[in-house]
Image 1 (cartoon, rainbow, N blue to C red):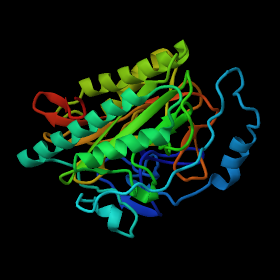
Image 2: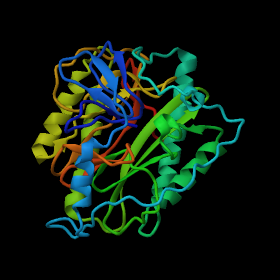
Image 3: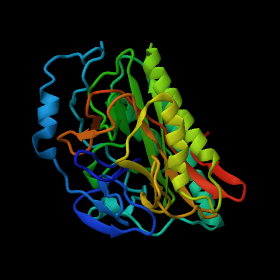
Image 4: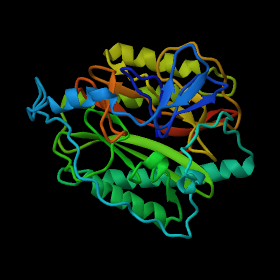
Length: 353
């Protein structure tokens, strides 16, 4: 799951809640609406907000079903089904039963041998769930049906769906369609031929989170969308390839900048990768754009890289549900994510089957 940064008119990715300021030893930013501010060495969590009417102005004025110069329909919210239950015997992350908003841990996730094995198990399950979700993608299925299947598979494996109840997020997976950058809430909307959809899965297994996402094609997708998805995946792969002990985190953003620049795509700056492990979101903050942030990768450390690329504007707008984030101009957005373990030989991808 993504973590957010500065707003006005931008946002930040990932999950969190009410106003909170957190000192960070790395750069800045994180979960459910963390504010990332250039030049300030902290992460702050945003209040739930509606962009002071900007969302309604830009969203509701789209009375035309189709976007300009496109046959694609504007993304609109559907009906959200009731909360899905989790059996009592399945351990919950601390934020589920706490009345306090989830926080962002400043301590990086560095593991001993037991922790590494637990991270590998949670990462593998997340990858298997995501792979299964991908087999369901087809025109005519609703994103709520995908959520139901993902929820059931996770609890059948004795794990908890990490997004559920995180900062009041109502579902077990994020489904971000077309112009949705991240944090799309599964609902009654039917996937249509030509859509692209990012499925973002995080599981909590034996006290550790595994976090991953992929953007899928729905039916017959045009070349413009296919190329965006292809380049986004390449950006993630190339960024992973430079990871190793001692490597500066800012090289991730520099690597992605080179790749996206060749194709004239934009990189959303308000949402970031993050440390993940015993907590859902922690240091380091992984910026996906060129930056001068400090900090180096540590042996046995785990974190995510999750670039979000757009065809048009990189400025995000949040819907009134306080979660769904879409591109300002309605242009397509794609994202890929893996949880990584830094090893002596580089980086091991934990979220692959």
